[in-house]
Image (cartoon, rainbow, N blue to C red; front, top):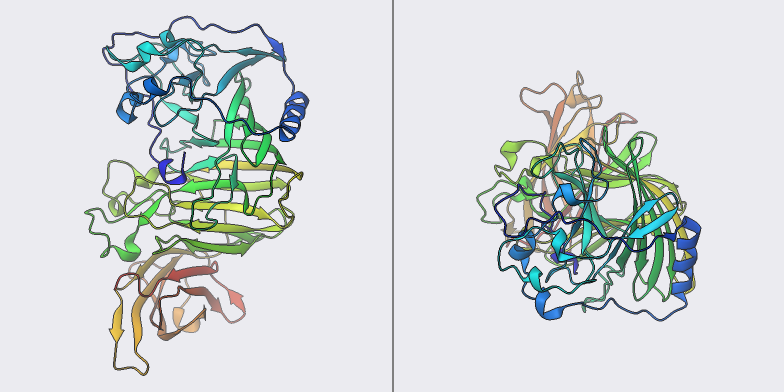
Length: 517
């Protein structure tokens, strides 16, 4: 599965409809075998020494007939899943294989240190009459699984956690809306023009019953360049939090080794609402990258939809956090029933293994909303060479809230259309830039006694001014004209200051001057 194909493939569990096949057949398990974390580590380490063997498509002709809509039409009823009990949180149901999800994974129920592998039967699933799943052979395997909200019997219960496709997983968070995804590892993202990125797969899962609000999931990772063992300790309430332990073993050299990778979609926002030609004011799952730079201090980088592949790096202080945020929570800014205003933020809180390295942000050009074009991850300073072992521990927060900060935050960023000034010597491009900051210690202050420190990678800002936002005591507007020449991107770092005191988070705006000529 490619990066651009990863978006919008997971829908919430659907309400039951008349089906020929009712599903919910009794689950059949293989004989139990012992399982432990140390055994999984040993297996992943041993696999590194073996040649990579990709998963075999169990039924190519049948899966070719299970396209997107056919895949959405087949589901395992919650009442037929693993760990079923009245009003229980954490019931697990399987995803069926399909044209987009051809690689089978193995699912195991974990109980008292013993693994019980779930054996595939098409009778587990509910689907319309004449569905290609009728022809699937026994033992075909599954595409992935999802974890459901508490179920009181009858119909379906919504899901809040999904593992599906390559090493992708996602949660709907506390706002109950899917959006951003995470991955086990990123290998050679945006390296070269020939699409050299690898997408290792979670090939087998071991899932324990939720107990005391905690569910533990183990996963085996396999790919041409890496193997790995992962442990996810997941809590649903009050917010979805995942403690991740990752051990990764390299078969081959990796040129860009992305740890705790986050994957999202950004088409456009109010920055350029005049540009795309769509009727909605904004379309994005995330609108910015947040990087912790110190105690209670963060750097904010609004996302862009660039004209070409863009990779930028930000230093990450020892074991500091980062994440992709959906800062704009105003429905009126989207006007879409797809609920972009409820897409979760995903914050990475490092525990160990993030002592030295940087955060990299990858932005890919897109003309549609149906593709993930944003990736952010940590890249260790240590070279990722064949034979290397890496050990990472981190916590993922799927939430509608951002980490607390003492500083004012960028609320809105608007960029006027480019104007070519041929009267200048030499000719130049001019853009109107407007940046609105709110919160922090701006309330009660007079912007006339403050300043905006601007650091511009090339070009210059003409007549920057700070004024108070109308009807907002804690909001200031920075406005200036950006003069630049050439197509290369311009980075503008902004910090509001009062004397020596910083009043706002450092904000780095990226402008592609010739993108919209």
